[in-house]
Image (cartoon, rainbow, N blue to C red; front, top):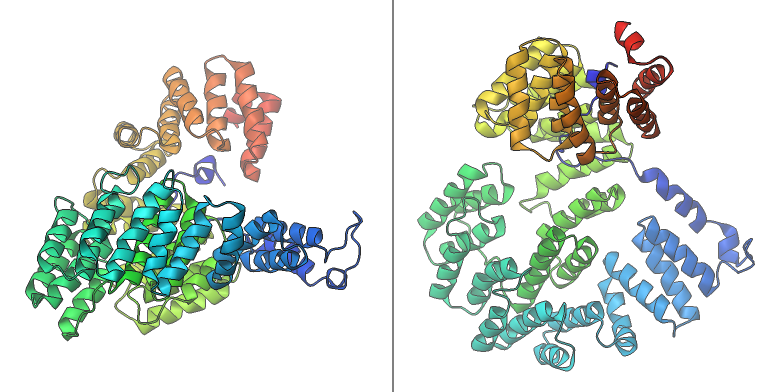
Length: 580
């Protein structure tokens, strides 16, 4: 593999692309089936594995392995032996919610609240159970008796809002939600929930005004806001207005499954239910909306637990399942993501997306043949949709099966009657597959076409420009393209490296050093970028610094061919390698 081929210039996440984690679960599976553990045999450390301490260690290990089911079971086993332990109670509580067993977690909330009355999550869980039981007065008492500062300042108003709404006390509900209007994290949650609350309270004119306020001036509004507004307009007998709203949004998001489903519902003239029909569903929506806000602010663990509480109150909330699956994938927990996607309803707007994500997770778990069969079956079942073929093409490209990837991209493109701006990603993906399978002329044509559709796309500018320079073609144009890519993404280490390497290939070594040093600052863990900086240092006479960078590149575990090249440079210097 050449340096050009080994360099990671193109990172494309079609569904979710990451490393395989399944093997890390094997030690836990072996442990949980170990007969000595079940029989209470002593460990090498002297404690019994079925003791509270042994079960606690097993639970912690399970949590580290992201096996919430096993963690919850071990914690509960330990807790039965030591029911007064705050540590075990807290661990069991968190693991149960993370595993979706909220009913069991609710049982532990009185103990936890007695141990620490101000702790947020037990109060939120107990409130969720009370909301589900429609005991709105108890929810309000829970808020009144508890703390009001910190995180409670955000969630107390949400609980009060929908408890008052459940009691039919509209003024108090609206006033409670109003407290979040200027909250630094939850102002967006407020905008999302305001029309939903007013709709629950059966206030049509304020509901419409709130929906318009939420989407006004936004080129691409939130999908659930648009769906909720369209449903509201339909129920007001304004189907034409609902259609106009959906079609306007389809211009910016033409493949959105929720919008497409809404349009099909209009075509079928089926009656439309409200997005959120009552106070309990409103609280579930609040937990879902708060999870998206927390996720954006690096509150991933809490977002995961909020989504489980949302599903506890509203089990049909497939939006929460899709977001949970996405969180699991981002953490490489593909088995849990697969289970979550499998629970999405076949009647859901997300049904096809969930199946595609399942196929991707199955592939990440090492069951590639099974994933391919699923995608082939989906492609055959719907001869008009390119999505299964595109997922297959992305999957092959991740596995570096370049000819197979190019073939599937071609088949997907055949299902697209007219190329639009948004299709640049498909041409770019096929262009990469062609280039990596040594069909550069075809790849070049695809990338030029992608730039016609999206002229300032930095990934395409960078990839094609880098390739041209590496092949000594169109040097001036290629350099301008990479400079433009850097302007568009000045903090992308890979693109800054491309500019540095282009200057190096043009023998502008002093300028190359400046760019490559910056690239290393931005992306210091990349062995290729580090190797490039070493080459540039050597060319400007800074040999000791060059050797330091090459040794550092080796420590970053590069691919085998690059490692051999770097080692030769360390042994012989740069010039003999360049001459060869």
